[in-house]
Each structure stands twice: as C-alpha cells, then as structure tokens.
Amino acid sequence: MNTSTEGWTTLIPHRRPMCLIDDVERWSKQEIVCTTLSHRRHDHPLRDGDRLHAAQAIEYAAQVIAIHAGLRGRRHGKPGRAGLLVALRHARLLCRPLHTLEAPLTIRAHCIAAGDREAAYDAQVGCGGEMILVGRLVVIQD
Image (tube, rainbow, N blue to C red; front, side, top):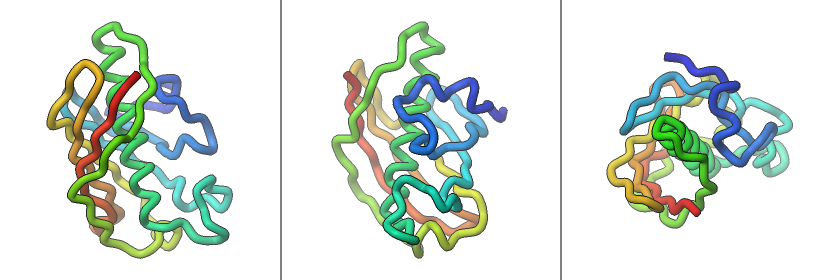
C-alpha cells in the first residue's frame, strides 16, 4: 500500500523542505516502511555545505517513527502529538555520506514497545541493499 503524502503529512510537525519522507510504502500496527529521494536535493535543509552526512539518517528514522505514531493514533481516533527523540541505542552508521547515494532511501521502523507517552523502535535506513543506519530509537510524546 503506497500512501500519498496527502494522507500523512499533517500528522508530523515538519513541512517541506524539512519533511524528508516522500512515500509511506506500507504500515501496520507494529511496522512502517517509507521511501524518499530527498537526500539527493541540493537544497536539503540538513546539508553541511555540499555534504549530507550519514548521521542525518537518524532524522530520517525519527520522522518515519513520527509518521507511524500519527497513523496509529489516527486509527484509534486520537489526535497527533508532538514527540521528542530521547535515546538512540545500539546504533551503527555503516555508509558513506548520504548525498553520494543515487537510489532511494528505504526507512523501516518496527515498534518493539509502546506506552501512553513513550515508544521504542528498531529502525533501519538503507539504500539499494547498502545498510546506512541500524539502531533503537526511544521517543516520548507530549
């Protein structure tokens, strides 16, 4: 299921150009998979000069988690809530700078635990079979 941006962009606090995700490919109660080519944009808001460091993959994972939380909330009739990334654990960056990658990024997040205000996700950011980021992100919602 490909979900157009019209269906989820109001669920997260970011707008273009800071909204980095192009498409929600599929999602379920526990998992979400998104894609984007925003790392190829020359006007990318997180660029450092002409470089987009691999560490920016953390922001991609965080945005996908925010989208997932918003979609889950909507399914249960709850309004979207702002969230804050409070921990990144067991993280590994395994790639060259993002701006050098030609193919779309694929961002996956799997919810491993969720409470009323907090959630933990195992996340992966990859590109054409190359893993860029793996790690566990913990978020708290207002």
